[in-house]
Image (cartoon, rainbow, N blue to C red):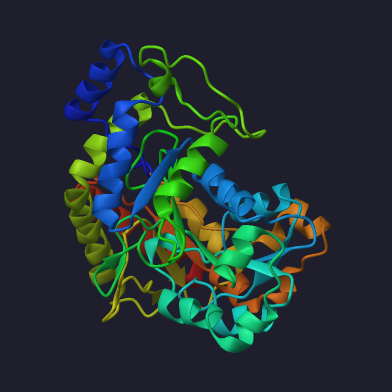
Length: 403
């Protein structure tokens, strides 16, 4: 069976983890701090905070910005549930908006959904393809939209507009006009889950890129406290002579990354450009093969200005129903090839359906979902395996469409 997205575990990575284990320091420490610095250098943003998940990163920024009951957060309807769940955790209302044919959030839908209760817009870089941040950033800075904004906290009033919080779980290494994700808008949050391009098994990072008069270093310091139970010193700081005493300044959360996780990330980031190159080659092989098929809708993954991180290859099949797509998937699995679907739009999930959201209100999102099949993309996928995937998909589609 060709798997869908196994992690690449190689000797250099193993050696770095073993080095951490032998060091006697396995929780948040020097390797986590180094990983944060390396990520900032790679992405071109001032400060980065590593945490135990992207979900924690999204929620902690919402809470730092003061999002609470009565507030609204605009998110694309086509995303993983974590994006919306963090809004619900804060007591706010997720406002779902339509997406485009590229799976990413639709600008006109964002503008139509903004009210005086809107505090945050959370674009999602689906499959690693960055959203139109130039337009989104410009929108929230227009006089008309700023006039609608009603700040309820000192931080909100300091920004004086809607915060743009990018769910960049898929898009480490993606770029717009050569500027990488992490430096494209106010705040971006990455995921390092086991299936991501760069993995720390579990983990995530908050890339701070807030404009003046914000001091990103000061915000980083505050977030370190907020994500460690409100404690004003971490374990590493307390090891210094006479520095055992600490204070708790708020009822914070527990979301820190460990040095074991960071040791994986340090090695993965060191070789990340090689990872992207290999994933790009797989994308190009799929595109070369499926462009020849009249039934294949090739995903957008680069334009004159935008480049993907090559995280997912979301192939769509023209002219099929959801049920036919599912049958195609079954037939692909019969050929010993694993594929997936990204994602079920949020109103199709029981929790959000029961809150009153209806998938009929989002026809583009449903159309994208109903015809989508995510193909395997990972570093160790051989040329032979790529050809096996291509053959399995072609055979399965033809069997169903001709059957």
